[in-house]
Length: 95
Image (cartoon, rainbow, N blue to C red; front, side):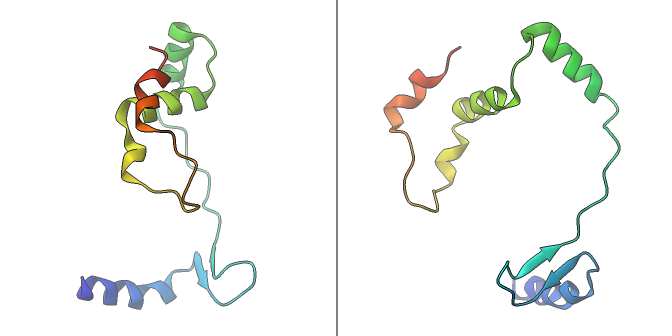
């Protein structure tokens, strides 16, 4: 780990898209990345999702994925609160 962190420390100043300096707006500033081309099958996936379920907000898909996988169990809130009790999770899913 020490070796890898030393490599990272040596490479960070050479990255043209990264600027690290003390400033009130935040120490790390990234240059915006160029837009990437749309993945080849994305339109087909979107079309199939719309055909099956109609228009559904992406946040609903994300919420269902979070509820089903319980991935939030692995992270903690920075504010220390705002989580649902464990007994609510199984009942929160609408499927």
